Image (cartoon, rainbow, N blue to C red; front, side, top):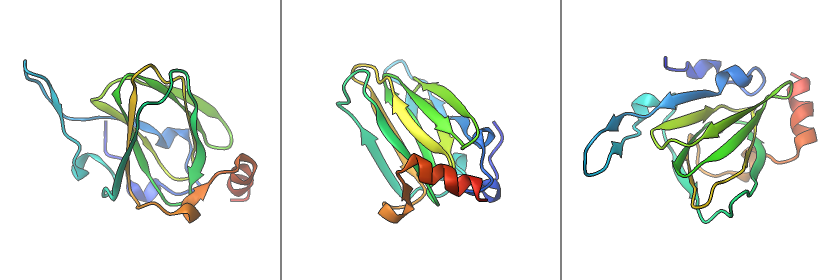
Length: 148
């Protein structure tokens, strides 16, 4: 996968084509594999890492977009679906590999659904937490995208 140009990642112009799967370098070993995420595979510098665990099977999470925050989402264990929406179209991506992550730029509505039992969702983010960066109302999101 070619590196995504960070200059293309703008709230108003982002579309589902900017949501890309990125392979994470893996070191194979019979004792267990090692996957390494460093800044050189991401189009942003990491500022925060958080993860969801003990999510009940079949549960739903998310339901928001970001104004500035870029996210790299990885299924560390198990699987879940990421529903992506750019205000014009929707797409569902299954994450089920710990050596692959999904880059979600700004201006993309995201929802997580259909978690498998024991799944762990890790997110590497471009920004520290700021409630002002979140758009949590879908209709507000659609209006912001439509007005640009």
